[in-house]
Image 1 (cartoon, rainbow, N blue to C red):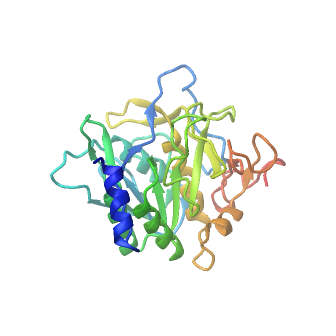
Image 2: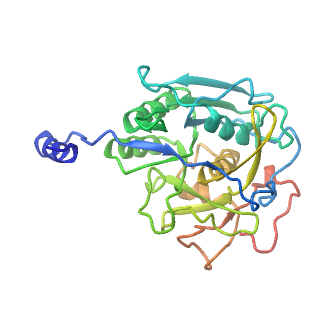
Length: 315
């Protein structure tokens, strides 16, 4: 009997209990090496001062470990907890460090982080799978969300993607109902691939990636669940040895939306729809919402905008 059949039998016998496989989830970034990867971020009109955009709401991420010595939270702080199973080999911290550095900055980097002042809680949920690839599973993700809730986190970055899972879906629904905003990468499986999760759950803000010409990332998943597009192709980061590191993927677009959500977050109206209505966008592709770009290109909230203005195409 295979695992799926065993799950179905348990579901039939257990009544109302949630039963599902312990699915694996993978990071959604890759190193970009082509000539198209020479630009630095400028599309969202985000503030470029070293202090970034100041927020007070606690933010969190489920990712790999983060090198606290490399990431610069400026006047905020970073708390990291390893929640992946201890008997499994830990995944390298490159991905998590890159995501954290986009959010709050990196020491020695020329590009400042998007935010200042937040407490960034990092749940290290990744391990190496049987192929030596960084992965996490549904049970560990559920535990990570619970840990973030205990820390008072209100906005969560998930630069990961995988299959649907009933246990994870229930946890996300419950946390969202309690006011947690969850932002996730749509995945890098291509435009004809099925939806990836947790981005495709209705409570989650799904983020896709575009390049400097406002064209969609050619590996990005597509679908009606996509909410926003943000720069995620050829982003120039600084590696731990101070060498340029150019990356692409929906993973790296996600922190821009996480930062914007944190900047507009209000306890009194924290639903996905109400929060999205507070975020300005530039319409891309088909007029209005579409399955490629969602509502369009994220534009910096007023408090975070470098010019303090948005163009005529912004809504």
